[in-house]
Image 1: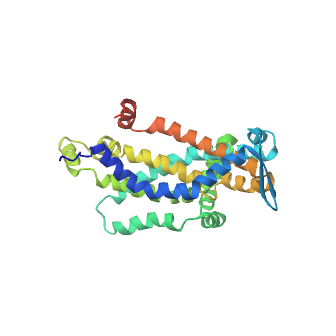
Image 2: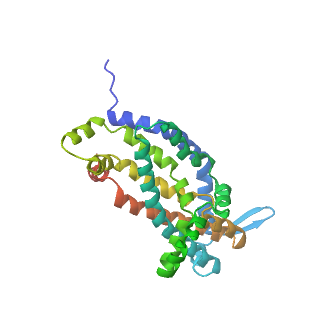
Image 3: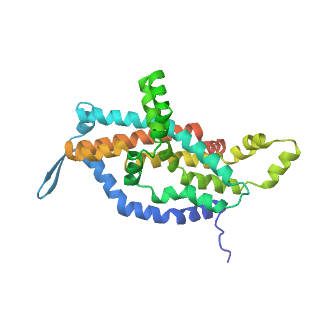
Length: 294
């Protein structure tokens, strides 16, 4: 009796699901209920009593209220500031991670030590640690102020552009702290590129710059796209993100209903940003596969 062979695609899917199965189980166990609850809260009038939480469905009343109350305007301003800061921080983190990964991929002594140094912030960084570093001037503000760089920006640029730039430069060292995982991902991709491709390009007269643009960067396109998505999610979910801090504080100020509505607006905006980035930076072969369903 002949046994039916499992197709290659089915086998690959089973392997993939075996890797993410633990995450799916954890999500269903710990995250699905709070997520649904927050959606219900955002569409309800929430009253907390001694006996528990009372809900009365009110439709989109909480979402509309955000555009009418003072706390809502503060939230929208913080959300706008975050998106502008993300516009500056994202390319810096991606470019920095690629540069450092290329340098760490060179045959140098102590390479493992330097990899650990760049990954160490990922292990020890947390909201309180980051805030303490910024408060002590370790983010970069003191260095830039000593050369009058901040004053030059304020004097020559429009306030709408100067504010996010100053914020970025004042926390530039902290921004680099968010590059550890991205560096390791790019480094893993670099080590999978066949060295014979570089040798063949060298025989044809290609220099280091041509090799980087024609071989290295195209080979890393998938991983760079993964890093872009990962970085946006990382910055958007950081515990000391100003938008998240504001939503937490509004749970007490304006109630769970409006705070939950703010959280869902934030979620939808970040989802839209990820969708735009996917359209702009998704590698061509992935777009082609999605288009033809293969």
